[in-house]
Image (cartoon, rainbow, N blue to C red):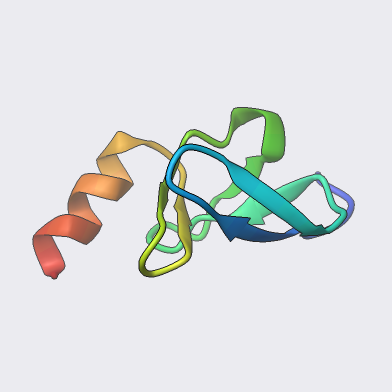
Length: 62
């Protein structure tokens, strides 16, 4: 489906690509997320989330 996993540093309003790739993996669901579709992440935990649903689930477990 996707070719290479990117390494990302998640910042408060943006992210920095540390190692080029085309996707990341959701920390909750394990789904692949295209970088151009990445909208949800946690700066403190440095984790990406597929959607607001996964982000909310993560907040509930903390």
